Image 1 (cartoon, rainbow, N blue to C red):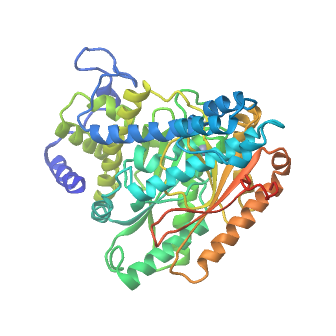
Image 2 (image 1 turned 90 degrees about the vertical axis):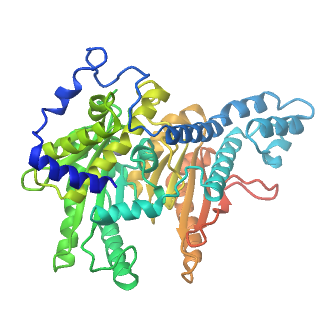
Image 3 (image 1 turned 135 degrees about the vertical axis):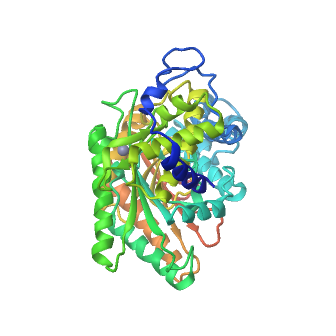
Length: 509
Ligand SMILES: [Zn+2]
């Protein structure tokens, strides 16, 4: 395991290895051609630690899902062009089935000859249907191949942690951070996204308490006497291509503010655990920055006092460039040496090993973006396809697909939702298309009454959304889909209601 290797390396280095020069100095010269490698080496570079099969699987999946969403508008344009022809309904259905893979609701097509087609309803319904099919695929087939949960749990515990709880920004450009950017098994990692990564300390404190209780009562994932800790990570973000405009909206596109905000929350959570539960209770914290254009990460290291240092970090893009022409074992050693050099003795062996693991994993993603997208994504700004509001959405592991708003009530998340609506107004409403919002509550089927509460949550939140954004709703520019899922049954999502009415007798929402 990497952690074991890290410990061996660390011991060896303490005896014999001289500290390396600055990693940037190592990165500056390209061994094969003597030119400066910079941050964007030639597209044909292949890193020895890049997992090619994983990259191919992830790319095929990303492309197929995004194509299914992006096919909706061109298909509906074709349908719209035919609306006054004879046999319109059967022609439209043939087009929909061949391009989208499903038929459109008959009631939305049948009256087209007397008036215009309700394209807004057709669009929202098609987005929801595509989302439904996407979810069914995830929960029946596991297309992202997340089968190594147990191995990851073992590794995490070897590093000294019994849970990894990650709070990225709710921005859709970070929605793939777990499975793609950090290459971790999504089911084995807790993810809660918040605008600006400013996570709810009470929510994390509640999870900490439940985690410790599970260890104490059930020995899951390990018994309470094992000296492992709760690891909380924050992922803030920045844009290397357009730092002034495409950074984190919640922090005014100011990278330093985004990093400081994340650190402040981490310290607040640590303090909350220490003050609430005495007897040495604490957590470990990890601050990660992510470049949403290249998917490179910055892992922050501690200063001499052991506190996370905003200015001391390792950038995976530099690691990639510095190690791309080494062999695999040299590259691994280089990463370990770099962590040792930059962190001194202020990191535990476990944390250092875990950081090495994340940096190594991310090299595959750096190459993924470089080889598939020419160095950086073309959609460096927002390009989400729908808003996800509620609790759940573990199936969303794709970039720029979903703007998240984790919430129990619309009131508590009003600020996050307003940010989302503003983004979608620019992306869709300005083109006459509606904002599609999936309202989702996952529940534990083995807890009496939890399903009913999830259903009530869905209804209440959907109603509150339509109330809050009444002007959009009244113009057919905001639609909601209400969804629940039983976590215990590990099954499909269930659709409760949709504001696009597909029965002739139903009124508009
Ligand atoms: Zn953000």
